[in-house]
Structure formats: C-alpha cells, structure tokens
Image 1 (cartoon, one colour):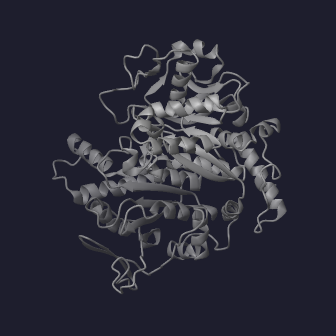
Image 2 (tube, one colour):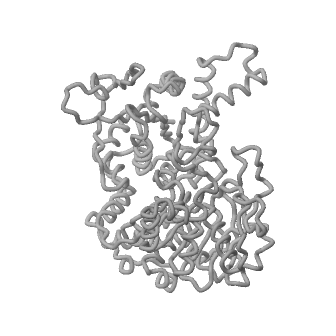
Image 3 (cartoon, helix red, strand yellow):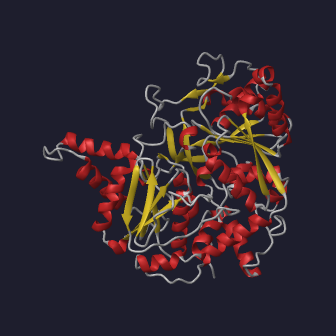
Length: 578
C-alpha cells in the first residue's frame, strides 16, 4: 500500500481537495486502484449537524455517512464509492479511544495523546485504506489522504505527529507528502508563507510558530488558475507528477500519457468552446455561500456540458421573494423576481428550517403556472406538494409539520425514524431503492426505462401517503415510491414539459461523464431539447448537442466517447472497447 498525504498551509480552503482528487485521478489513469481518506480535525463526530455556512454542504454516501464535501470531489473525480469511515474526525478518534478505555482495553494504563490517540489514527488509516471502493471490489493500491485545515492549527497537532511516526512505520518508499501553500505576489522581499524553503525540507509559518518536516527532495509545482477544474489533473501531469511518483514510491507504471486523461482534456477543451448558454435559477436559503450547494452546482455543470451549453446559475435567496421583503427592501424583492423570471429553468434544492420556505413556494407556483422547467429536490419536492395542495386542492392551510405542527392539512409529516430529541444521524440516510409505478414517466425514461433506481437520501419528513389520491385526481402524480409503497419518492405533473420532484438527492451520484438524469432532464427542458431527446430514445448525438471533435482527438475517438456517454445513461456501466 502506498500512502500520499496532502496538507495545506497559510489558509484553509486553498484547494487541497482538488489537488488530492487530481493526484488520485492521475494515478488511476495509470491503471492503479486508488482510494481516498479525508481527515477533519474538528471534534464533531461527523458533518451532519453543521450549518452549510460553516463547511458548505453535507455530502451523503451510500451507507448514510454524512461527510465533508471533499469526499464528493473524490467520488466525482475518481468515480468511486466511499464509506463513512473514509471521513475521519477528531471526534471519531477520541470516541473510539474512550470506548476502548471504558472496556478496559488499555489494561489500566494512562491513556494519552501519544501513543494512544496517534496509534488510533494510524490504525484507522491503515484499515480503511484497504477497503475496496471500485465496482470490481479489488483492494486499493494507493491511498490519498487529505488533512483538513492548515498545518499549525492546534487541532491538527495529533494528526501531524501521527503521520510523522507513520512514515517510519510504513517505510519511506511507501509514504510521501504533498504540501499545498499559497504563495502571494508582494513587492516586499519578506514573504513568510514561502520563505526559507531549502533542499530537503518545507516550512509552514503560522501565527503560533513553525512546523518543519524533513523530506528527501524538494519538488515544487505551480498550480495557477485554470478555466476548469478538469484541467487541474492535466496541469499536474504536464509537470511530471507521474514520473515523480513512479520514482518516489516505486510504482510499477509507465510514464507515458494515459487514455483516461484524454477524456479530461476533451471535457476541458469542450467546456472552453461552448457558445450556447442556459440559465438556472437556484432558489435556496444559503445562496450567499456557493459551497452550500457544491454537489448541486456540479450536477448542473455535468448536465450542461453533456448538452454542450454554458451554465449560468442565478442564485436567488428565497426570502427575497416573499411579501415581507417587498415591504422592507423593495429593490431586493424586484431584483430577486427578475432573476427568477428571466431564468430558463428553476431548481429548488434541499434544506432545513422555516426561513424562506414561503418564497420557495412562490417560486414553485410561478414555475407551475408559467410552464417553466422545474426540479425540486428533497425539501423542494415537499414544498411542491404544499404549493399544489394550497392552490389546486384549495387547502389554504396546507403545510409541512416541520413548519406548522398545527396545520389543518399536514401534507408533509415527520417519519417514525425521526428522533426530535437528537439531531445527529437520525434522518433517513443513504442509498435506498425507488420503484417506478408507471411506465409513462419522464424521469423513468431519463433513467433508461428502468424499473427502479437507487439514490441517496437525507430527510426527516415525508409526503403524507394518506392524501395521495387527492393529488393524483388532479394530475399530480407520484410516479416513484419506496419498496414498501409507503413513501412518495418521485412526483411529476401532467400537462407540463418538466415539473419533477424527487425525495432523494441525485446530485450526490452525478459524474462528469454520467450526469444525474433528473438534472439532465432539467437542462434539456431549459434548453428546449427535452422533447427531441425523448423522441430519439434518450440518445445524445454530436449534431443535436453541437458536439465538435476535439483537436486532441480523432473523429473515431469522438464517436466512441458519445457511445460511452449514451451507454452510461442506459446501463450505468462502462462500455467495453473493441
């Protein structure tokens, strides 16, 4: 097993996750099996109870793990499936050590940071690094580990010490470190973030001192701003990263360019050449921080790229659409409605809490009445049910019990699993199966005319199944339900080009070359291409998507990549090359 530790200096959020993902992508393109671990030094057990303004979105895995959004980068870049134990926190480590102490595993010894906490970190990493993450169930050969925060943070000290020991435990030829640092351009010659870097060491200066790690050689790569994140693996590969790892870690690979990276170059080149534009209004309550909807934005980008359109996301704070804003800040109110009305499609993502929900309902009502393409995800679907009940069933008081426990028409109710006394890990989480109840469903066709799909969930409330008949009599159909037929999973509205809601979060499984079908449907409808796409049997063609052959690829390769893309949509599997 080879281990690559990615650390950061100067500031958090410098791009360690993208670097870690890109390194993993390059090594996977060399035919290696790669896994990834994210270490977050905070004391929380997991990311489940964070506000989106703290660390961005909460990413959900197949096993229900609520983890850092960087694990979403790993899954999208490497096309792998991780587990909750791939996200390691201080809280998890201390919890495991304390549990051992209570059981008497330490035989009465004094439990200390060194060696007990540092040993627990190393054991966790070594154990999790060997868990298969690919469909072929093969044990990984390389583990990329990202240490969150910055070197010098007091919370990071036990992990730094653990990996200082770790490099000797696993031997030098099996461990190396990548340090990502901001190097500002200033006129003064004094530049502490990058000064005193000499052969054999790197230095990270912080407000509380400095940390020096001894390395065998100095390798410096400049990662400048690029037009697309798809170019980062190419940038690293061009600067000889493969050759360095071959030598440093004694990897059994050749240094020649890899076919997998040709796909990334084609995506980057095509992204830069796009001419047509499609705009989506994202109506949410955390719009001031785009990382709050990181996977949603990526899913939109994947779908826009698939149909060769530039994506414009119009962030609309749902509270700005409400009548109260009209009274207090009329300019902000009219600007919000202008952005909503001028968009080609409308997306209402998931969320929690009552703030802004009435604005979301207003946006959904406008999309339904104006026949605008609409996608509601999780809470977005639940509010679509509320909107239809109020305006089409004339249930004026209809609401979710999350927002009005005394509502006369509880169209959305809490689930039996929900424990209101404890917030962490009490939701319906992870991969669940959704059964399509009719063959006449747009979303079913977009998924490849399958009988069921398996997507990731994260919710405490659900549509009230007892009221289902009232909705369907008015053309508001629940076309997808859970295996028991008790939970409403997918809604579609008759006599509308694309009015779809899903209880699950399809953005978590979207990939650059395999866009999420609900998001792809939204982009196709917004671009005016959904009817043609459905008529052609859900088949993308170079002509219909303005897909031009990349200068880097021959025409045969272009045709092959479209076959690959379409095969993904239909089967979800790789197309074998003949």
